[in-house]
Image 1 (cartoon, rainbow, N blue to C red):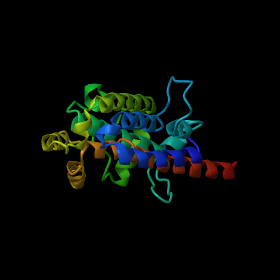
Image 2 (cartoon, helix red, strand yellow):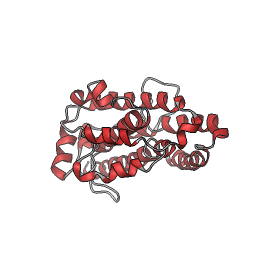
Image 3 (cartoon, rainbow, N blue to C red):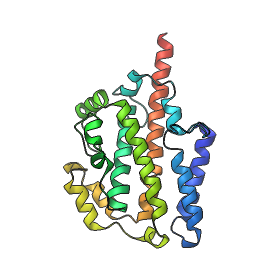
Image 4 (cartoon, rainbow, N blue to C red):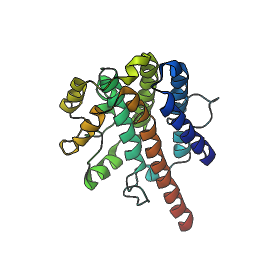
Amino acid sequence: MNLEQRKHWNANHKILTGILSKPEEYPNAIALFLEQHRWLYASGREPSVQPTYEDAILSGLREQTFRAYPVRTSNSQNSIAWHLWHCARIEDLTMNVLISGQEQLLHSEDYASKLQTRFIHTGNGMDEGEIAELSASISIDALSDYRQAVAKRTRSIIPGLRPDQLKDKVNPERIRQVSAQGAVKASEQWLLDYWGGKTLAGLVLMPATRHNFLHLNKAMQVKLKLQKSLARST
């Protein structure tokens, strides 16, 4: 996903924001959401599909670069591993628990064990030692599988919503479920309040699309900075 494609993605996100809650635009909105969302995850075994933003980040990526922490960029010092894990965790629990009332894939598909990290929350509020631990220990293969599973589930949930549901506020009981599952650190309860004030359309726009895009931007910045450092040292 090059610069022009990223600009196009941003322009389409503005369009999606404008039409998502309009019943008469529902078919167009869902089609646009699916296209926007496709750009945010690795294309996997779809050779005919244009390389996505995650494809661009992962292409030629060394494990050392993937796990490197801290990496001081203009927007973040977190590792690529953390960014990819964090946005998948957020999407897993918001799409599955808050929108559809299902169990998180982290638990239903045992990714809590497969990922080889003890952290089951969103990653908000982690200290430097915790981020370093996750970056060093997380399974790259399991994270790839987890992200693919999260993406597939989201693409099945959103088209299954009725147009009128998109204007509904998040069910407070589902917010309580997220809290009870330990999916948000005690110090980060603001996040529950933030989601609780959203409509379902709001969750589709942020985090399922925009939040992912922002973290992929940060991951790409990390990759480019570290590649530049490697080039200077060789």
